[in-house]
Image 1 (cartoon, rainbow, N blue to C red):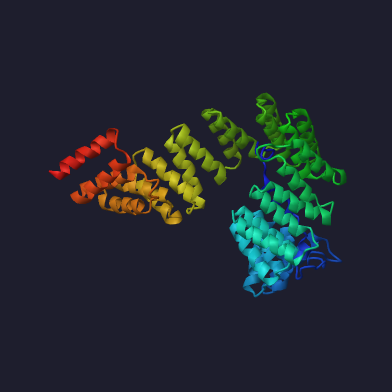
Image 2 (cartoon, rainbow, N blue to C red):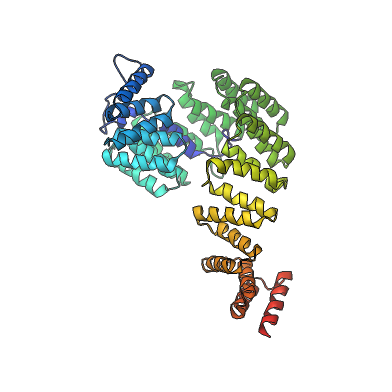
Length: 490
Protein backbone atom coordinates (compact mmCIF):
# COMPACT_ATOMS: atom_id res chain seq x y z
CA UNK A 1 0.00 0.00 0.00
CA UNK A 2 1.10 3.51 -0.64
CA UNK A 3 -0.57 5.43 2.18
CA UNK A 4 -2.06 2.61 4.27
CA UNK A 5 1.40 1.07 4.54
CA UNK A 6 1.99 -1.59 7.15
CA UNK A 7 5.11 0.21 8.30
CA UNK A 8 5.92 3.19 10.46
CA UNK A 9 5.59 6.48 8.64
CA UNK A 10 6.73 8.95 11.25
CA UNK A 11 7.70 11.70 8.87
CA UNK A 12 4.33 11.61 7.14
CA UNK A 13 2.68 11.84 10.52
CA UNK A 14 4.87 14.78 11.43
CA UNK A 15 4.01 16.62 8.23
CA UNK A 16 0.32 16.01 8.82
CA UNK A 17 0.69 17.20 12.38
CA UNK A 18 2.48 20.42 11.58
CA UNK A 19 0.81 21.23 8.28
CA UNK A 20 -2.03 22.79 10.24
CA UNK A 21 0.18 24.73 12.65
CA UNK A 22 -1.61 27.93 13.66
CA UNK A 23 -0.58 30.42 11.04
CA UNK A 24 -1.41 33.34 13.26
CA UNK A 25 1.53 32.39 15.46
CA UNK A 26 3.87 33.03 12.56
CA UNK A 27 2.98 36.66 12.38
CA UNK A 28 5.29 38.76 14.50
CA UNK A 29 5.65 37.27 17.95
CA UNK A 30 6.32 33.94 19.57
CA UNK A 31 3.15 34.05 21.65
CA UNK A 32 1.08 36.23 19.38
CA UNK A 33 -2.61 35.40 19.07
CA UNK A 34 -3.21 38.28 16.70
CA UNK A 35 -5.16 37.13 13.64
CA UNK A 36 -3.23 36.75 10.40
CA UNK A 37 -3.88 39.55 7.91
CA UNK A 38 -6.22 37.30 5.95
CA UNK A 39 -8.87 37.86 8.63
CA UNK A 40 -10.92 40.90 7.71
CA UNK A 41 -13.90 42.28 9.62
CA UNK A 42 -15.70 43.28 6.43
CA UNK A 43 -14.70 40.79 3.72
CA UNK A 44 -14.52 37.02 3.46
CA UNK A 45 -11.17 35.67 2.19
CA UNK A 46 -12.20 35.26 -1.45
CA UNK A 47 -13.62 38.77 -1.62
CA UNK A 48 -10.53 40.09 0.11
CA UNK A 49 -8.35 38.38 -2.49
CA UNK A 50 -10.24 40.19 -5.27
CA UNK A 51 -9.83 43.50 -3.46
CA UNK A 52 -6.10 42.98 -2.99
CA UNK A 53 -5.61 41.85 -6.58
CA UNK A 54 -7.10 45.14 -7.71
CA UNK A 55 -4.92 46.98 -5.20
CA UNK A 56 -1.66 45.52 -6.49
CA UNK A 57 -2.79 46.04 -10.07
CA UNK A 58 -3.37 49.72 -9.34
CA UNK A 59 -0.20 50.02 -7.25
CA UNK A 60 2.36 47.30 -8.07
CA UNK A 61 4.75 48.69 -5.44
CA UNK A 62 2.40 48.15 -2.50
CA UNK A 63 4.43 45.53 -0.67
CA UNK A 64 2.02 45.21 2.26
CA UNK A 65 -0.88 44.45 -0.08
CA UNK A 66 1.26 41.90 -1.93
CA UNK A 67 2.20 40.19 1.33
CA UNK A 68 -1.39 40.01 2.52
CA UNK A 69 -2.50 38.75 -0.88
CA UNK A 70 0.23 36.11 -0.95
CA UNK A 71 -0.73 34.79 2.48
CA UNK A 72 -4.40 34.62 1.52
CA UNK A 73 -3.71 32.80 -1.73
CA UNK A 74 -1.60 30.20 0.07
CA UNK A 75 -4.24 29.73 2.75
CA UNK A 76 -6.85 29.23 0.04
CA UNK A 77 -5.10 26.52 -1.94
CA UNK A 78 -3.02 28.52 -4.41
CA UNK A 79 0.57 28.12 -3.17
CA UNK A 80 2.22 28.95 -6.50
CA UNK A 81 0.38 32.23 -6.97
CA UNK A 82 0.79 33.11 -3.32
CA UNK A 83 4.53 32.50 -3.36
CA UNK A 84 4.87 34.73 -6.44
CA UNK A 85 3.16 37.58 -4.59
CA UNK A 86 5.34 37.12 -1.52
CA UNK A 87 8.52 37.04 -3.60
CA UNK A 88 7.43 40.30 -5.22
CA UNK A 89 6.91 41.73 -1.73
CA UNK A 90 10.47 40.67 -0.84
CA UNK A 91 11.81 42.49 -3.91
CA UNK A 92 9.95 45.56 -2.71
CA UNK A 93 11.64 45.37 0.70
CA UNK A 94 9.33 43.22 2.84
CA UNK A 95 11.17 41.04 5.33
CA UNK A 96 9.34 39.61 8.34
CA UNK A 97 8.65 36.24 9.94
CA UNK A 98 5.13 35.91 8.57
CA UNK A 99 6.27 36.48 5.00
CA UNK A 100 9.07 33.89 5.14
CA UNK A 101 6.91 31.41 7.03
CA UNK A 102 4.30 31.45 4.28
CA UNK A 103 6.94 31.27 1.56
CA UNK A 104 8.08 28.11 3.33
CA UNK A 105 4.52 26.76 3.56
CA UNK A 106 4.02 27.39 -0.17
CA UNK A 107 7.28 25.66 -1.08
CA UNK A 108 6.38 22.73 1.14
CA UNK A 109 3.00 22.37 -0.55
CA UNK A 110 4.76 22.52 -3.91
CA UNK A 111 7.06 19.65 -2.81
CA UNK A 112 10.14 21.88 -2.75
CA UNK A 113 11.40 21.08 0.74
CA UNK A 114 14.94 22.50 0.34
CA UNK A 115 13.54 25.95 -0.51
CA UNK A 116 10.89 25.53 2.20
CA UNK A 117 13.60 24.97 4.81
CA UNK A 118 15.54 27.97 3.52
CA UNK A 119 12.45 30.14 3.97
CA UNK A 120 11.70 28.76 7.44
CA UNK A 121 15.30 29.52 8.45
CA UNK A 122 14.78 33.15 7.40
CA UNK A 123 11.55 33.25 9.38
CA UNK A 124 13.44 31.92 12.40
CA UNK A 125 16.01 34.70 12.08
CA UNK A 126 13.21 37.26 12.12
CA UNK A 127 11.36 35.61 15.03
CA UNK A 128 13.55 33.02 16.82
CA UNK A 129 10.91 31.86 19.27
CA UNK A 130 7.93 31.50 16.96
CA UNK A 131 6.17 28.21 17.60
CA UNK A 132 4.84 27.60 14.08
CA UNK A 133 8.22 28.41 12.58
CA UNK A 134 10.13 26.13 14.96
CA UNK A 135 7.71 23.26 14.32
CA UNK A 136 7.88 23.67 10.56
CA UNK A 137 11.66 23.96 10.60
CA UNK A 138 11.92 20.73 12.58
CA UNK A 139 9.68 19.03 10.03
CA UNK A 140 11.70 20.38 7.13
CA UNK A 141 15.03 19.26 8.52
CA UNK A 142 13.67 15.75 9.09
CA UNK A 143 12.31 15.61 5.53
CA UNK A 144 15.80 16.44 4.26
CA UNK A 145 17.44 13.83 6.47
CA UNK A 146 19.03 16.45 8.72
CA UNK A 147 18.11 14.81 12.01
CA UNK A 148 20.80 16.61 14.03
CA UNK A 149 19.48 20.00 12.94
CA UNK A 150 15.90 18.87 13.61
CA UNK A 151 16.84 17.79 17.14
CA UNK A 152 18.69 21.06 17.78
CA UNK A 153 15.61 23.10 16.83
CA UNK A 154 13.26 20.87 18.84
CA UNK A 155 15.44 21.16 21.95
CA UNK A 156 15.57 24.92 21.53
CA UNK A 157 11.77 24.97 21.25
CA UNK A 158 11.56 23.20 24.61
CA UNK A 159 14.08 25.59 26.16
CA UNK A 160 12.12 28.61 24.94
CA UNK A 161 8.66 27.18 25.69
CA UNK A 162 9.03 24.62 28.51
CA UNK A 163 5.34 24.74 29.41
CA UNK A 164 4.10 24.24 25.83
CA UNK A 165 3.51 20.79 24.34
CA UNK A 166 4.68 21.49 20.79
CA UNK A 167 8.42 21.36 21.54
CA UNK A 168 8.14 17.94 23.16
CA UNK A 169 6.12 16.73 20.17
CA UNK A 170 8.85 17.94 17.85
CA UNK A 171 11.64 16.31 19.87
CA UNK A 172 9.69 13.09 20.27
CA UNK A 173 9.19 12.92 16.54
CA UNK A 174 12.91 13.28 15.91
CA UNK A 175 13.67 10.53 18.42
CA UNK A 176 11.12 8.18 16.86
CA UNK A 177 12.47 8.97 13.42
CA UNK A 178 15.86 7.81 14.70
CA UNK A 179 14.40 4.56 16.00
CA UNK A 180 14.68 5.66 19.64
CA UNK A 181 11.18 4.42 20.47
CA UNK A 182 11.37 4.38 24.25
CA UNK A 183 12.90 7.86 24.40
CA UNK A 184 10.46 9.18 21.82
CA UNK A 185 7.42 7.87 23.64
CA UNK A 186 8.73 9.25 26.94
CA UNK A 187 9.17 12.68 25.39
CA UNK A 188 5.71 12.59 23.80
CA UNK A 189 4.19 11.63 27.14
CA UNK A 190 5.71 14.85 28.52
CA UNK A 191 3.71 16.69 25.88
CA UNK A 192 0.58 14.80 26.97
CA UNK A 193 1.25 15.71 30.60
CA UNK A 194 0.99 19.34 29.51
CA UNK A 195 -1.93 18.81 27.11
CA UNK A 196 -3.71 15.44 27.42
CA UNK A 197 -5.66 16.16 24.25
CA UNK A 198 -2.56 16.74 22.07
CA UNK A 199 -3.64 14.64 19.09
CA UNK A 200 -0.25 14.67 17.40
CA UNK A 201 1.41 13.08 20.40
CA UNK A 202 -1.19 10.30 20.57
CA UNK A 203 -0.84 9.66 16.83
CA UNK A 204 2.94 9.48 16.98
CA UNK A 205 2.95 7.20 20.00
CA UNK A 206 0.40 4.99 18.29
CA UNK A 207 2.40 4.74 15.12
CA UNK A 208 5.55 3.99 17.09
CA UNK A 209 3.84 0.85 18.43
CA UNK A 210 3.44 -0.29 14.82
CA UNK A 211 7.17 -0.13 14.21
CA UNK A 212 10.20 -2.06 15.27
CA UNK A 213 10.76 -5.79 15.60
CA UNK A 214 7.68 -6.47 17.73
CA UNK A 215 4.78 -4.30 16.56
CA UNK A 216 1.81 -4.01 18.89
CA UNK A 217 -1.23 -2.85 16.90
CA UNK A 218 -3.53 -3.09 19.93
CA UNK A 219 -1.51 -0.46 21.83
CA UNK A 220 -1.49 1.62 18.67
CA UNK A 221 -5.28 1.40 18.29
CA UNK A 222 -5.73 2.54 21.89
CA UNK A 223 -3.86 5.74 21.06
CA UNK A 224 -5.82 6.31 17.86
CA UNK A 225 -9.12 5.71 19.65
CA UNK A 226 -8.17 8.37 22.20
CA UNK A 227 -7.98 10.89 19.37
CA UNK A 228 -11.18 9.62 17.74
CA UNK A 229 -13.18 10.00 20.99
CA UNK A 230 -12.86 13.78 20.76
CA UNK A 231 -12.35 14.07 16.98
CA UNK A 232 -14.25 11.23 15.28
CA UNK A 233 -13.48 12.59 11.81
CA UNK A 234 -9.71 12.97 12.29
CA UNK A 235 -8.33 11.57 9.02
CA UNK A 236 -4.88 10.78 10.37
CA UNK A 237 -6.35 8.80 13.26
CA UNK A 238 -8.79 6.99 10.98
CA UNK A 239 -6.10 6.07 8.46
CA UNK A 240 -3.75 4.95 11.20
CA UNK A 241 -6.40 2.81 12.86
CA UNK A 242 -7.21 1.20 9.51
CA UNK A 243 -3.53 0.40 9.08
CA UNK A 244 -3.32 -1.11 12.56
CA UNK A 245 -6.40 -3.25 11.92
CA UNK A 246 -4.87 -4.44 8.65
CA UNK A 247 -1.73 -5.34 10.58
CA UNK A 248 -3.96 -7.57 12.73
CA UNK A 249 -5.43 -9.06 9.51
CA UNK A 250 -8.79 -7.50 10.36
CA UNK A 251 -9.36 -6.61 6.72
CA UNK A 252 -13.10 -6.07 7.09
CA UNK A 253 -12.54 -3.65 9.98
CA UNK A 254 -9.91 -1.70 8.06
CA UNK A 255 -12.08 -1.66 4.94
CA UNK A 256 -15.05 -0.38 6.94
CA UNK A 257 -13.04 2.61 8.18
CA UNK A 258 -11.72 3.40 4.71
CA UNK A 259 -15.21 3.07 3.22
CA UNK A 260 -16.42 5.61 5.76
CA UNK A 261 -13.69 8.00 4.61
CA UNK A 262 -14.65 7.41 0.97
CA UNK A 263 -18.26 8.34 1.70
CA UNK A 264 -17.23 11.40 3.71
CA UNK A 265 -14.88 12.65 0.98
CA UNK A 266 -16.42 11.81 -2.40
CA UNK A 267 -14.60 14.74 -3.98
CA UNK A 268 -11.15 13.15 -3.76
CA UNK A 269 -9.76 9.94 -5.25
CA UNK A 270 -7.25 9.09 -2.52
CA UNK A 271 -9.63 7.31 -0.11
CA UNK A 272 -10.78 4.96 -2.87
CA UNK A 273 -7.17 4.29 -3.82
CA UNK A 274 -6.38 3.58 -0.18
CA UNK A 275 -9.13 1.00 -0.02
CA UNK A 276 -7.87 -0.67 -3.20
CA UNK A 277 -4.32 -0.72 -1.84
CA UNK A 278 -5.52 -2.31 1.39
CA UNK A 279 -6.84 -5.22 -0.65
CA UNK A 280 -3.63 -5.41 -2.68
CA UNK A 281 -1.60 -5.61 0.53
CA UNK A 282 -3.63 -8.71 1.46
CA UNK A 283 -3.37 -10.27 -2.02
CA UNK A 284 -7.09 -9.69 -2.62
CA UNK A 285 -6.57 -8.61 -6.20
CA UNK A 286 -10.16 -9.04 -7.40
CA UNK A 287 -11.50 -6.70 -4.72
CA UNK A 288 -8.65 -4.26 -5.37
CA UNK A 289 -9.41 -4.10 -9.10
CA UNK A 290 -13.05 -3.43 -8.31
CA UNK A 291 -12.12 -0.51 -6.08
CA UNK A 292 -9.72 0.89 -8.68
CA UNK A 293 -12.48 0.63 -11.30
CA UNK A 294 -14.81 2.55 -8.99
CA UNK A 295 -12.14 5.21 -8.47
CA UNK A 296 -11.64 5.54 -12.23
CA UNK A 297 -15.39 5.93 -12.74
CA UNK A 298 -15.85 8.41 -9.90
CA UNK A 299 -12.75 10.46 -10.81
CA UNK A 300 -12.24 10.27 -14.59
CA UNK A 301 -9.51 12.93 -14.54
CA UNK A 302 -7.43 11.22 -11.85
CA UNK A 303 -4.27 9.43 -12.92
CA UNK A 304 -3.53 7.79 -9.57
CA UNK A 305 -5.70 4.65 -9.95
CA UNK A 306 -3.92 3.77 -13.19
CA UNK A 307 -0.46 4.57 -11.82
CA UNK A 308 -0.95 2.48 -8.68
CA UNK A 309 -2.10 -0.49 -10.74
CA UNK A 310 0.81 -0.01 -13.13
CA UNK A 311 3.27 -0.05 -10.22
CA UNK A 312 1.64 -3.15 -8.77
CA UNK A 313 1.67 -5.01 -12.09
CA UNK A 314 5.28 -4.00 -12.65
CA UNK A 315 6.20 -5.53 -9.29
CA UNK A 316 4.33 -8.66 -10.36
CA UNK A 317 6.40 -8.70 -13.59
CA UNK A 318 3.31 -8.15 -15.73
CA UNK A 319 5.21 -5.58 -17.75
CA UNK A 320 2.94 -5.28 -20.79
CA UNK A 321 -0.12 -4.73 -18.58
CA UNK A 322 1.81 -2.21 -16.52
CA UNK A 323 2.79 -0.28 -19.64
CA UNK A 324 -0.84 -0.18 -20.75
CA UNK A 325 -1.90 1.27 -17.39
CA UNK A 326 0.83 3.90 -17.51
CA UNK A 327 -0.40 4.80 -21.00
CA UNK A 328 -3.95 5.23 -19.67
CA UNK A 329 -2.58 7.63 -17.06
CA UNK A 330 -0.61 9.51 -19.71
CA UNK A 331 -3.75 9.86 -21.82
CA UNK A 332 -5.11 11.96 -18.93
CA UNK A 333 -1.87 13.79 -18.07
CA UNK A 334 0.49 13.50 -21.06
CA UNK A 335 3.14 15.80 -19.57
CA UNK A 336 3.27 14.41 -16.04
CA UNK A 337 7.03 13.97 -15.44
CA UNK A 338 6.68 11.32 -12.74
CA UNK A 339 4.48 9.09 -14.92
CA UNK A 340 6.66 9.67 -17.97
CA UNK A 341 9.77 8.75 -16.02
CA UNK A 342 8.39 5.49 -14.64
CA UNK A 343 6.92 4.59 -18.03
CA UNK A 344 10.25 5.33 -19.74
CA UNK A 345 12.18 3.17 -17.29
CA UNK A 346 9.69 0.34 -17.75
CA UNK A 347 10.04 0.51 -21.53
CA UNK A 348 13.82 0.61 -21.30
CA UNK A 349 14.59 -1.94 -18.61
CA UNK A 350 11.73 -4.44 -18.71
CA UNK A 351 10.27 -4.23 -22.22
CA UNK A 352 13.58 -3.40 -23.97
CA UNK A 353 11.95 -0.78 -26.14
CA UNK A 354 14.46 2.10 -26.17
CA UNK A 355 12.52 4.14 -28.75
CA UNK A 356 9.50 4.54 -26.46
CA UNK A 357 11.83 5.20 -23.54
CA UNK A 358 13.64 7.92 -25.48
CA UNK A 359 10.34 9.53 -26.38
CA UNK A 360 9.26 9.56 -22.71
CA UNK A 361 12.53 10.98 -21.38
CA UNK A 362 12.66 13.63 -24.10
CA UNK A 363 9.17 14.81 -23.15
CA UNK A 364 10.39 15.34 -19.59
CA UNK A 365 13.50 17.16 -20.76
CA UNK A 366 11.54 19.41 -23.11
CA UNK A 367 10.11 21.08 -20.00
CA UNK A 368 12.95 20.43 -17.57
CA UNK A 369 16.30 20.08 -19.37
CA UNK A 370 18.12 19.86 -16.03
CA UNK A 371 16.30 16.74 -14.87
CA UNK A 372 19.39 14.67 -14.13
CA UNK A 373 17.57 11.33 -13.83
CA UNK A 374 15.86 11.77 -17.19
CA UNK A 375 19.18 12.76 -18.77
CA UNK A 376 20.90 9.70 -17.32
CA UNK A 377 18.28 7.22 -18.48
CA UNK A 378 18.08 8.93 -21.85
CA UNK A 379 21.78 8.18 -22.16
CA UNK A 380 21.11 4.57 -21.17
CA UNK A 381 18.45 4.29 -23.85
CA UNK A 382 20.69 5.73 -26.57
CA UNK A 383 23.53 3.49 -25.41
CA UNK A 384 21.34 0.40 -25.70
CA UNK A 385 20.83 1.34 -29.35
CA UNK A 386 24.54 1.85 -29.93
CA UNK A 387 23.91 5.56 -30.50
CA UNK A 388 26.95 6.60 -28.47
CA UNK A 389 27.09 10.21 -29.65
CA UNK A 390 23.64 10.94 -28.23
CA UNK A 391 24.39 8.81 -25.17
CA UNK A 392 27.59 10.79 -24.54
CA UNK A 393 25.74 14.10 -24.70
CA UNK A 394 23.05 12.90 -22.29
CA UNK A 395 25.55 11.43 -19.81
CA UNK A 396 27.65 14.59 -19.99
CA UNK A 397 24.64 16.72 -19.14
CA UNK A 398 23.69 14.38 -16.28
CA UNK A 399 27.23 14.60 -14.90
CA UNK A 400 27.29 18.40 -15.19
CA UNK A 401 24.16 18.50 -13.05
CA UNK A 402 25.00 15.86 -10.43
CA UNK A 403 28.77 15.26 -10.58
CA UNK A 404 27.95 11.66 -9.66
CA UNK A 405 30.40 8.81 -10.17
CA UNK A 406 27.73 6.77 -11.96
CA UNK A 407 27.13 9.49 -14.56
CA UNK A 408 30.87 9.95 -15.03
CA UNK A 409 31.38 6.19 -15.45
CA UNK A 410 28.72 5.99 -18.15
CA UNK A 411 30.17 9.07 -19.80
CA UNK A 412 33.58 7.37 -19.81
CA UNK A 413 32.07 4.28 -21.42
CA UNK A 414 30.48 6.48 -24.07
CA UNK A 415 33.85 8.14 -24.78
CA UNK A 416 35.46 4.70 -25.03
CA UNK A 417 32.75 3.40 -27.37
CA UNK A 418 33.29 6.44 -29.61
CA UNK A 419 37.06 5.67 -29.62
CA UNK A 420 37.70 8.96 -27.85
CA UNK A 421 40.33 7.23 -25.74
CA UNK A 422 41.90 10.40 -24.32
CA UNK A 423 38.67 11.64 -22.76
CA UNK A 424 37.81 8.09 -21.71
CA UNK A 425 41.17 7.74 -19.96
CA UNK A 426 40.75 11.05 -18.15
CA UNK A 427 37.28 10.08 -16.96
CA UNK A 428 38.30 6.59 -15.81
CA UNK A 429 41.34 8.04 -14.01
CA UNK A 430 39.10 10.51 -12.18
CA UNK A 431 36.78 7.69 -11.07
CA UNK A 432 39.65 5.39 -10.10
CA UNK A 433 41.32 8.03 -7.95
CA UNK A 434 38.13 8.67 -5.98
CA UNK A 435 37.10 5.08 -5.29
CA UNK A 436 36.80 3.68 -1.80
CA UNK A 437 39.98 1.56 -1.50
CA UNK A 438 38.00 -1.21 0.22
CA UNK A 439 35.25 -1.32 -2.43
CA UNK A 440 36.87 -0.79 -5.81
CA UNK A 441 35.22 -1.64 -9.12
CA UNK A 442 37.63 -3.84 -11.12
CA UNK A 443 35.99 -2.84 -14.42
CA UNK A 444 37.19 0.73 -14.04
CA UNK A 445 40.79 -0.43 -13.94
CA UNK A 446 40.31 -2.70 -16.96
CA UNK A 447 38.82 0.13 -19.04
CA UNK A 448 41.55 2.48 -17.85
CA UNK A 449 44.13 -0.05 -18.99
CA UNK A 450 42.40 -0.40 -22.35
CA UNK A 451 42.22 3.38 -22.87
CA UNK A 452 45.94 3.76 -22.08
CA UNK A 453 46.76 0.82 -24.34
CA UNK A 454 44.90 2.42 -27.25
CA UNK A 455 46.76 5.69 -26.59
CA UNK A 456 50.11 3.86 -26.70
CA UNK A 457 50.92 4.40 -23.02
CA UNK A 458 52.18 0.88 -22.32
CA UNK A 459 53.45 1.48 -18.80
CA UNK A 460 50.21 3.01 -17.55
CA UNK A 461 48.17 0.34 -19.31
CA UNK A 462 50.12 -2.49 -17.67
CA UNK A 463 49.81 -0.86 -14.23
CA UNK A 464 46.03 -0.55 -14.65
CA UNK A 465 45.65 -4.15 -15.85
CA UNK A 466 47.68 -5.39 -12.86
CA UNK A 467 45.44 -3.46 -10.48
CA UNK A 468 42.45 -5.05 -12.18
CA UNK A 469 43.92 -8.54 -11.75
CA UNK A 470 44.61 -7.90 -8.07
CA UNK A 471 40.89 -7.24 -7.66
CA UNK A 472 39.59 -9.86 -10.09
CA UNK A 473 42.22 -12.59 -10.70
CA UNK A 474 40.01 -15.10 -12.52
CA UNK A 475 37.56 -15.22 -15.40
CA UNK A 476 37.55 -14.41 -19.12
CA UNK A 477 38.28 -10.71 -18.61
CA UNK A 478 41.21 -11.58 -16.33
CA UNK A 479 42.61 -13.85 -19.04
CA UNK A 480 42.27 -11.02 -21.53
CA UNK A 481 44.10 -8.63 -19.16
CA UNK A 482 46.98 -11.10 -18.78
CA UNK A 483 47.22 -11.40 -22.54
CA UNK A 484 47.44 -7.60 -22.90
CA UNK A 485 50.14 -7.41 -20.21
CA UNK A 486 52.18 -10.06 -22.01
CA UNK A 487 51.74 -8.28 -25.32
CA UNK A 488 52.69 -4.86 -23.91
CA UNK A 489 55.72 -6.23 -22.06
CA UNK A 490 57.39 -7.64 -25.18
